[in-house]
Length: 421
Image (cartoon, rainbow, N blue to C red):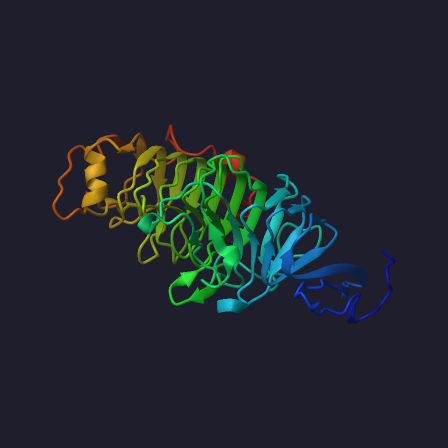
């Protein structure tokens, strides 16, 4: 594109005029913004996107893509995103909240690299083309847009044994929010080297969009090297499905770091959760809601606490959860923080060997003298024995389990949060 020489001005020009055809198909508006920076002239092309993507589409890293409200990749279409591409969501709540939604039957092919991750952030972020970070936002800037939602046809366990459900964070009358099915090997595409920042817009009271929402996503989908920073709600939530995910990092979320629901039965491997000043649990693990069952595996994770946050728990196992948690390293938590069995159902599953705990290595907070005291059974009527027996006390830096944090050295969180990976 021809470079325009302007001085001391910010100019916007519309390449197309946005409107709607008779069939409500949105026309994409391309806005070219030329900004004076330090005496040099730069072009920062911004592509406005709204409505449905109905054909195979590619977003390239020489543009910034601005998501207006809900952008939905329809069934049969594939959205390809080039490494280093920046996507910015607009502010808004309720039906106006912005999100990129990969609907059932569609695919996303978003493959970044360690040096050129694909970045989802807010229009408030001053990051520009070719950069990996802006300068005006930090881990305390949350809820500035929605998030990334991927929906599939893999099995889930729903209340009432219904075959499909509406995903959390999308209004009930938007049918593109449906997920769930019978195809465990369903393929929603590839997410690799993705950074999702400053999301979690409010849909309704107590209902926010997660940084990355995975609803009924099958194990034909590839998910690795993902970070979520400064989201109002959970960092990454797995609603059922069978997808495996590795090399994950969540920092400064407002609720839970990794959240499992509806009989998710995949494997989460090599993960780090770093609690912020307003975070709740590092892990929140729920079980099935209907008769369908499934067991998760969560392994090789490092969780870093926060002594300022009001809650700041290690993990909460609830609602009849079944699965295995292995090789966890934890430090930096408050003395009041715990790993808990929340109710009779999950305590029974623990007793029956359906919920298991492998090695945990914990740096004890001041005031805690026995690691077993970190493990708490809150069931009303079911007693358990041996809960916490697989845990041991370590000093920081001497752990033998946990995440291989060098795999996450590429992340924004590591760079600006000085995590030392």
